[in-house]
Amino acid sequence: MFRFPALPGLAVCLLISGGSAHTGTPIPDARIAKPSRQFGLPLQGNPGPDTWLLGQLYGNTTSAYRQRATTYRNGQGLHFGLDFSAPCGTPVVAIGDGVVAEVDGPHGSPPHNLVINHAGNLSSLYGHLLERSPLKVGQRVKRGQVIGKTGDSQLTCVSAPHLHLEIRDHSHQRLFNPVGYIDADWAALSLIGGFGRGYQVDLTRPRRWQTLEDQPSVRLRQPLLNDYAQPWPPAPGGNR
Ligand SMILES: [Zn+2]
Image 1 (cartoon, rainbow, N blue to C red):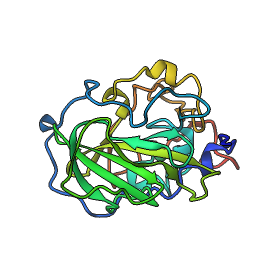
Image 2: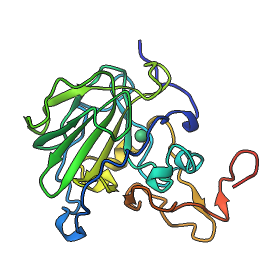
Image 3: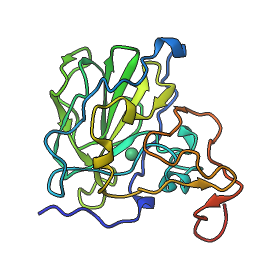
Image 4: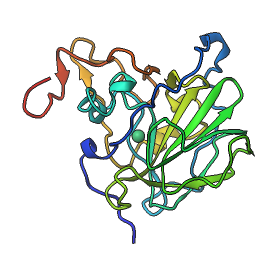
């Protein structure tokens, strides 16, 4: 029987690199589709303790803050995806119609990942997949089509089983908060879940980036957005 792990958020989303230098020509903002709930959830059925739950949120999470100089350095110190806790082997579905762009490409989130290109210069990345997706680059997929199985960022299937979902632009230079793009009852989904639920507070601007919706987009390999002089909660050991 599967049980959700009771690990602290610090440990659970390791091995996300944010990608290598495999990026394309920048795409102007005006050519990137704005969030209009045009996509669906990447997992089927209803959430619950035996199916899947919302895990670490996108953005300025305390978990990401504490790893801002390491795991999340390439993503300006933010958790640049949305995690869904699920037992290993849970089917993952495409969030929208599109074309498979990469199977086990260079964008991190091992052991396996998949990228689908969608309309509006948007791409979805499905990370920490259990095994290599059987899909081929160039293959068309429909929204809701099974494209892989969930795995575990720590490769154990007991310590941190989850899907890491990103919404990027086609050039892989910017990453967006998936919440506005995905049609779901986020208020209900965020009532319960796994790990990393808190947001890091900058005491000089305490209301900024504290909700599911209010989170900044990320540019890969740019300066940290959250290197706070007055952070809350303080880091273990008292250092920033
Ligand atoms: Zn993640």
